[in-house]
Image 1: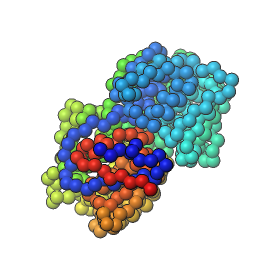
Image 2: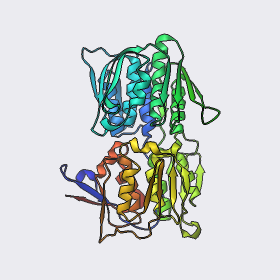
Image 3: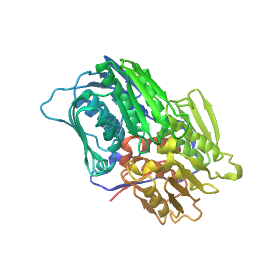
Image 4: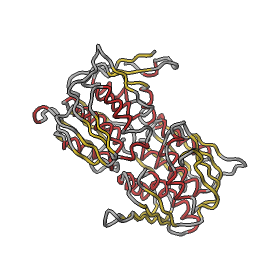
Length: 463
C-alpha cells in the first residue's frame, strides 16, 4: 500500500483518490480530538493519576501533551500513544522566565490552555504557526482580563496569539464571554473554573453574551467535567435573546476513561457511502454519543439516505436512493460546523442545490472554510454562492475535471479540506489534492484507512 511517508521530505506531494463503484464496508475512526484534549487538560490539573484509553494520536493532541509536559505534568504514553497515564499537578510551575509553549495551529490547545494557565497561575508565552497568529482569541482575553490577578494579553493585531500570561490565578469568580466566534472560549473557561474554585472554595459563574455557536461542544465539555468530578450547572436561556449561564464548583478527580471515536472524522466515511451509492458502518458511535457531530447522519437522512443504528454503530445506506440521487437540503449547521466541508462534497452530487446556514464563524478556523472552500469547488466547475452565514452549493452538472484534464486543489494546510476533497475523488477522476500530510493535525492515518475502506490504492505524486 502506498504511504505518504514514502515521498521525499522536500517534495510537494499530491494525492488522487481513484474513482470506483459503491463503497461498502465498516470502519472505526481514531479517538475524538475534542474529547482527548479535554480529558488531557482535566487529568493534567486534577488530583492523582488518570488513565485515558482510546486517545487520538495526532498533531493537535501532541502539542497539548508537549505543552503540559513542559509545565511539569507527567504523561506516560502506552500502546503507541492510544493510552495515556497522566499525573496531575495542582500548583503553578516554578520558573524564573516564562514557559514558552508552541501550539502549532491547534485551536483547542491554545484556547483551553490560555484559560487554564491563567487560573493556575504562572508565567507563560503561547505561540504557534503564522495562521494561528491570525486566529482571533480576543473574546477569551477580554473575559479573563478583568478576573486575573496579574496580566494576560494577545499581542498580535486584532486580538490574536501569541498569548502572554503572568498571573497568580483568578481574583474574581464572575466572568462574561462572547460566544459568536467559537464555543471553545466558553469551554476553556468552564474547564479552568475548578482550578480557581478549589483555591477559594467559591462557585464560578460564567455568562455568555450574545449568540453561542456550536452548542453541542459546550454540552460535551459539561459532560466530561462531570465525569472528572466537577460540579457543573449549565443553564440555557428560555428565549433566543437570553444569555447562557454556567455555574461551576468542585475539583477534578483521577479517573479511568475510554474516549469515543471521532465523530467529525466519521462524517467522511458516512459521506463516502452517500456519494458513491454504497453503505458504510462506523463502529464505536451511536446517536447517544457525547459528540454532536453524529448529527451529520441526520442531514444525510434528509438527503435520502437510510440510517441504521445499534448501541455501538451507525450505518449509512445509499444503495437505493429515490430516483438514484440525493436531494439537496436547506440546513442550519451551526451545531455541527466542522462537517460543513463534508456536506459540500455530498451536495455536489445531489439533484438540487444545498443551502448551508448558521456557520459564519467557519471563516475563523484553520482557514476560511467558506470563502476558501468555495474557491476550490469552483475549480471543479461547481456553482457556489457565498452568504454571510454560509453558502449555497449547486449540483455539479458539468465537471471540468477528469483523468485527462486534472485539477489541483489547495488544502490551505487545513486537514478538513484535504479529507473532504478526497470524497469528490470517489466520483471524479483527476482531482489532485495538495499537501495530503496536513491530515496529521487530527487524523494521521486517514489516507490508509480510506484505502482500506474503498479497497483500492490512491495515486501519490511528488514534484
